[in-house]
Length: 371
Image (cartoon, rainbow, N blue to C red):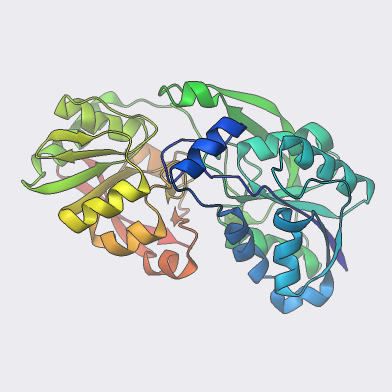
């Protein structure tokens, strides 16, 4: 029987849909709630654990009280044990660290956790490379390579372990960025250590690449193609990242490098929009979203653009997504599909198949989108 340690950071990703670009610190959490944010990390963990229901008699879970794990595993009917001396409300990084230490002491086979880079950093500070870990992506910032590509993929890896399949374990980087600098459009990532992660092919994400290649002329060509094709009275949601920055530069507009900007008739309507803003715009305008690919990982939805939520995407539709990328970035995926990780399995499946990717001026390719 597999003994699985489970930690859910209830506040992970709380600032994503409301444009706060993180959830570190009580002030940011309070601001996120004041903007109407909702806790979604348990939903992400549920997507992973749903995969394990068919073999739950082969798994024992040791987890944290209430929202940090107990509520979910109890609801799903798993055999579980609850850790002690962990806060049940206003949980913090200290509670994550305490939980990790207790799970280490109890010699669990693997720690599965739902959170972002801050959560990974906290767990790494305790367990380092002593036991295997695997992250369920639930945060705004996912630069570390200790996460499965989607919550469902995390469940698939644990299922393989529970069934006794042979899976390699390798050390991967834990990285986190300075959130304050992040909110000022500066990406400053730091390596905090390594943790051992089970390897299962396409189920584990790579470290996010940060500006390995610039290819400035190609980006200018892509931007020129996008701007030339812009229609009057259509609202364009310009996504995050340096690739989409080229589009805003072509328009001579200020850019929120790590947020989403709304552009109407080639003028900035609003910068750094939230999920609620976008839902309102969808009621008023024909809308298209211009998004890029996360280098080295392949995500087009679910990393740094949580404002494009499942609710937004259902209204927007796949046909109104314009994906842009250099061919070098796509080649670096080595054939792995693009990933839509919206938190809604039905929507992710609906967006799978293939999608056109604009790779230059009047130059595009068709590329697969997987689950």
